[in-house]
Image 1 (cartoon, one colour):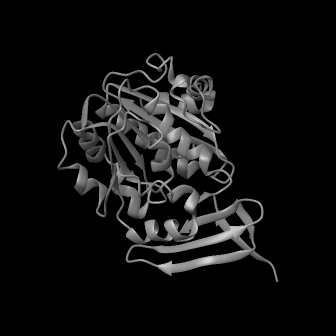
Image 2 (cartoon, rainbow, N blue to C red):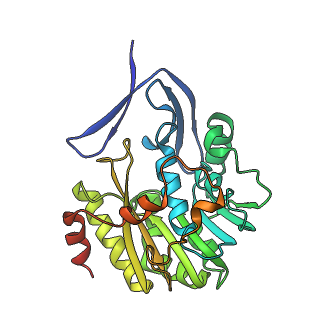
Length: 282
């Protein structure tokens, strides 16, 4: 008997992955957590039946979340990460010697525990001495911060249900206040291909534009995400995402599989249909 994991991307489109084994299934106070193993994508994590990442393509998402802002900020030392309990963002951040402290805010401790046990490839850097883990709500945590972080990375769920609080005008305003004078915020920005995600993406961009002087959208291809075409948001008080790119980033000795400075600049060149959506709220 074959076992398949399936996730609906729309009412008419479904992604299915053939599963060789289910490694974990449990329910935390917040959500159902499952870990599967597959021949094509390796191990992968799902929350409430929604695919979060797979071992095969997670490096694309995590590298683009981290290295884009880190290659723009001139001296990133204190970092706030909201969500990202799988540890992939942390794994990329600890590659930077300039970083002195990383606050990781994750509501669900069980997600971290499960990833530490079953998906070490993303979770291996969670024990780095610079990482401080806070198990609490991201919005509540950041309300108490002001002029503290050089970079904020919002690796949140989708803007529906539990993740809605991290896509509000209030949240982006508190992120602005928590950043230093030249701080940068990045967030996962959904996709523009399917209608529901596109509506959420445009709404999110409008709210970020209202909070930050500089707001741009960039893209990457992630095979297991809806449509494969995924967007990220870059917001800053002073730094332009391509004009302020560190020209000697390549000399830092940081190893990546997807990100590079040429790709960095190209990622901000968006398809016309996406540009038209963004212009509608600018």
